[in-house]
Length: 84
View 1: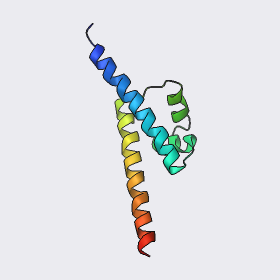
View 2: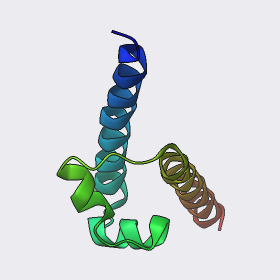
View 3: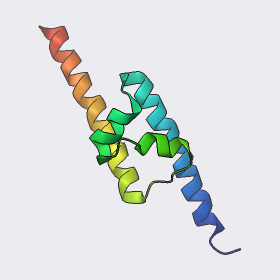
View 4: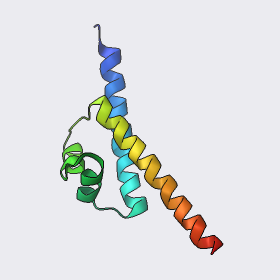
């Protein structure tokens, strides 16, 4: 029974990041293929995730960092437009 805690954490992170990506795509109206290209140079990234692909920790970190940075930059752009 060793190692089940690690598998559970991976599965939970996998489900969590999939939900975050899907929410991000809806919020920012970005096609799945474009997102995959921007994050990893892989237009099939999101499609493969929908079919069960589990991201390696380094790619999962990159995905989360990209979404955070993109959201912050769009907020700053909106603030600049509002101030003008």
